[in-house]
Image 1: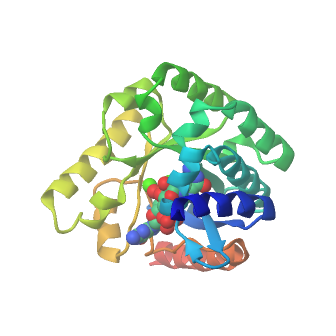
Image 2: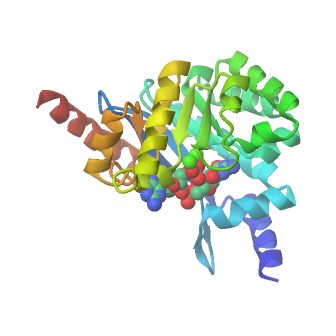
Length: 262
Ligand code: C2E
Ligand code: CA
Ligand code: CA
């Protein structure tokens, strides 16, 4: 019954415009400058309060509502990002369901055209599951997206099926190392070995590597030593509402300047 009511509420939330995007920065480890903001969906339910995406995205995927929700996130993100400094990219998460149904390429084209955001400033995050089923068709879609000038990132790498062969089937621009390895990198030799191996793959394939879920300075120093190119996590910032972006950017860039001075 609770699922059923979640479904119903999500439909009306979509109509009423109750979904929001929060943005979390990705920072270059060398320059300490913000390279991109990842758009993360937020839903404040009138009675339940905030519902985490880990709860509502799977339900939206099952009921097909992810098509509209995903398109909304793409359009909304592009509309907001076009006002950011032009060296800062927008990263948007895609559900595997968006590959299976509808026409993802034309949705992306339309979001770019109507916002005026250059394709080169859009990064799309996909998980390995996109390459698991109907992979030939999905690789064709990825190549079309790439041809538009959009960048493609492999999200949550190291979890799931983790076939390294996927890296050969499509030239990803970026690998995002799953938080679970990053959070244990200082205490677990196995996690360190995996982070090191993924950073090495990144170098060999010419892909950026972003460590997700970085919470401490020690973790960041270790990730830098291991050759990761970018970090994302609470250490730098939690996801913030759009109104706080300008202030956050200023603060992070001041930090970047003081790091490069010292
Ligand atoms: P994700 O794409 O792996 O996003 C990263 C998640 O880790 C976010 O959770 C973020 O708030 C959280 N996080 C970031 N830094 C840290 C840290 O230092 N420590 C810890 N403990 N957590 C950190 P969030 O926002 O709850 O999103 C969860 C998942 O929901 C996302 O995981 C993504 O898979 C999905 N999601 C969110 N927005 C969208 C969307 O617009 N479309 C789709 N398809 N999925 C989305
Ligand atoms: Ca992501
Ligand atoms: Ca992730």
